[in-house]
Amino acid sequence: MKLDDTVWGALLALLGAAILWHVQGFPRIPGQNVGPALFPGLVAAALLVCGVLLIAGGLRTRRRETGSTLPWVMAPDWLRSPPHLLAFAVLVASNVLYLLVVDRLGFLLTAFVYLAALMWVLRVRLAVAVPVALIMALAIHYAFYKLLRVPLPWGVLQGIAW
Image (tube, rainbow, N blue to C red):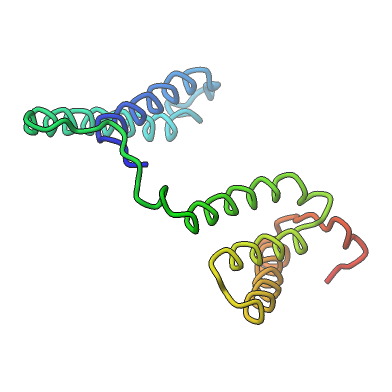
């Protein structure tokens, strides 16, 4: 989706304002001038300023292009391409599937299915997709589980520990 800069600016400004409003409820640290709201507040203020600048730029562009009617939202060309729509649907379905089954099935099996499905929809040959999905699932698991010490779910492979 191609959104006009004015629309993006309004969304960013709303997000910045919402974060600024939310961080007001963060607790104060006694005896200090700064607290946990400082950094998110600064980022939110920057989002708000960038949003206002985008709105101004978008409105200036619309004023300059008065002879033409610029759409607020434009559908990209890939929305008319069945292979691209299938790839998008598989990507969304893979993410939803991951969220729903990773705890029961485990990270390794879920990641393998996830990667294999994405490579399948991108038309990678099965002889390449399966080993690459397996190696990458193992490598990602090793990096997060062993090196970064992120507790990934084992699921049905609970008895296996390396």
